[in-house]
Length: 481
Image (cartoon, rainbow, N blue to C red; front, side, top):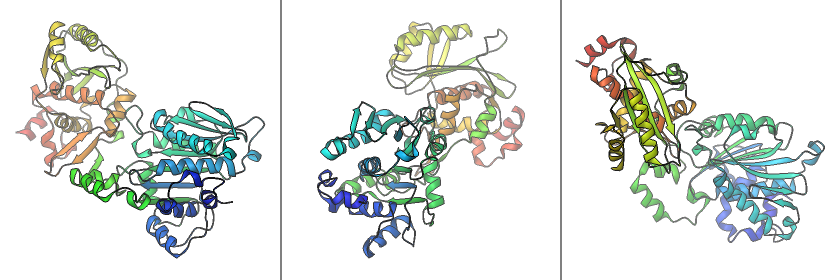
């Protein structure tokens, strides 16, 4: 029995669907994935969604489903997982005592749990399926046929060493670990685990986002290409789920056209680009550890405060050497924490570097200035917005005029920063959705505060000056004048 027949069978999956007509596009996708026969109308949808001409003749090993928000991606991924777990033969490829694993990977375990709950609901909805359950735990379901369905966050370390019969990547465009998307590392870790299972499958379901990462790379490489193993499908929300109202989508388009085209029309955003290259950032990451205070140097500092619940509280201290900024210290307090206790620790550190004032985010809550005053430190809000700090910082990175700690989280935050082109023509720089930039903001703020006294600031370089021509402070002042 194939998957479409199983869905229509009242003894199997039919009870999981209220109205199969609203899932018609998904039925075509499944027919494509499993190389089932399609009628003329279905072939037209297949060609429009895949850019291919010829219908498939063999099952695909990989599906990259790029669909609009609320299109039913997670539920259908769960159903495919149950079908593979119960209807496919994997035991002959497993060693004695070995389990075949269906891995559900998402940005965190809570998000992955959404698909696991769908899987659990499908298995519990039918006594034929339910009898296979041996252990039903919070983050895994073990079946009697030596298949284990497990959820995990997007960490490639936890993925290695498993025999994977199916891997499901949920919303891969939005994965974030330590400020960066680990999608490439996880894909590289999963594929070897699937290599010993001839009929293993990789199922990637996600809304699109930026024009980088494995989702975009596979779209560019395989959409419209008759590859026998990799199927890329792209369709908007209402194509996959006609129950979503057009008026809702229209309201979202009016609020933010670029975001709406991505979320509802499954278009990769054209208004975003990576801000800094990893190569240039890593070339500046030459410092290991913390540089101790020295009496002959004037130090400057910058803090990115936090109330202790969601974001880190970060402190950066540095000094200038000729036309280069050295970041002597970068320290971060991860939530949860007592913010006033952290302020006292920051104050003690500042005093050790002979400082009685600190500059910080100008949008910080009012309590910050008062807390620092109690600790004997004057808090001065930064005169510039965060985007301005990053635009200035860009020049120092691209000319190698800054040395930063070789801190993995800092590097990841910097290389994940996004440049967004605004309607007014002015760029804005910020961290990606679900990302963070606490360390990056502290270091960029320090760069601005540490170099503005000497007039060594970089926004003017964006007007066309060749970075390679800028070698020292004298040249910088010449260009600026």
